[in-house]
Length: 81
Image (cartoon, rainbow, N blue to C red; front, side):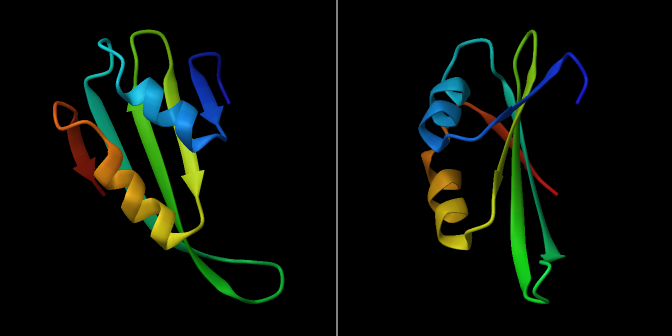
């Protein structure tokens, strides 16, 4: 990861970052990955751009990902890929 990127592991911390005034855009990417035991999991990556850093949160649970999409502020421009 480069110096201008930060990975966040806590959902509450990520939502607080998304509500900051300097954050204007968010990108949501969903894709399927295979775990080492052969099971396939839908992985969702949430990325928000601040003035200094690009913050990333990776969620492997579909239910949590849907709730997080609803928790994003309405003023945020969201792009789904």
